[in-house]
Image (cartoon, rainbow, N blue to C red; front, side, top):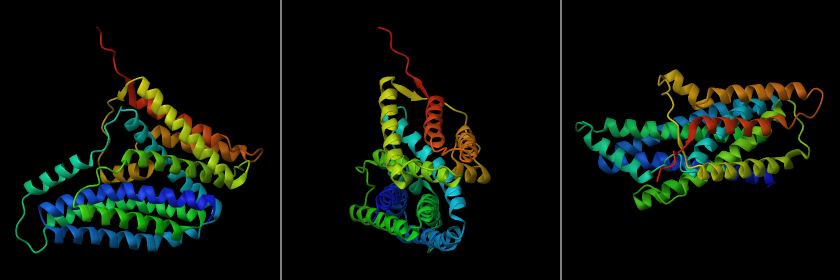
Amino acid sequence: MSGVDVTLTVSVFLASAVEAVEALTVVLAVGSTRSWRSSLLGAGAALLGLSLAVAVFGPALTRLPLDLLRAIVGTFLLLFGLQWLRKAILRGCGAMALHDEIGAFKRQAELARSSAGGRERIDRYSFTVSLKAVLLEGLEVIVIVIGLGASQGRVGLAALAAGASVLLVCASGFALKAPLARVPENLMKLAVGVMLSSFGIFWSAEGVGATWPIGEAFLLVIIALVLAWSLLAIRVLRARKARMRALGSAATGVLAETVRFFLGDDRATVLGVLTMLGATAALATVSAGWYVVPLGSLALLSLALSRRVEPLARSRK
């Protein structure tokens, strides 16, 4: 197994674990307060639908020309990764609250108790909520599995890593009958954000014609660069005692939610990524052009962070 394969496996495993913990929290809360049978049926129906999606779209993607595949998938991975990384940095510096699985469990349990329901054989509330949670979190896992796997020709390896991660999380969760609150979720999200961003940078640039100085080994350089920058950003923002800046609420329609799922919630970042890739494609006709996407991605992340944080006012003594 090559270094790229190991990095891919770790990335998929961690990403799947994060999503599995969030989905499991909902399933456990609904199942323990209303109906285990209906909750598990909803989760099973979602898993069946996700499996069919992988079976249909996975092989179809691998039939695309390799450069086109890497450009498309790399772009989505970069957008996914920058979004994960931005939120992990904001949580890491204290500007954004950490995700509270215990709190989420209690909120879901309270909603389940207060929701009206009859004595149907299948409790519709339990079925629907579990199905929605598993479907939404699982869809993100699928995008990552197919994206990372197809671009490297390792869909099977990526699927195995995701499956092992989900099974481990589910087995642990059901054995404890509680959300996995002690899992260092933000640290995992930071690691996944670094990995997804790095793979996205590498493959999107290569897909539009860039040539890396030392081939595939340069992926490790990109990972080190993105990780170092992220840790520095956390340190700087923490020193500034940053906090989240209030932004306007986004549209919540189905189309808007679908676009936001695939492209993220920052239009400037999307525009910036497309501009970078266009510039890289133009430069690749006369030079290697590899430096545009790594440096541009870090600049876009810096811009996205600056738009979402503000320093806390120092208290007067």
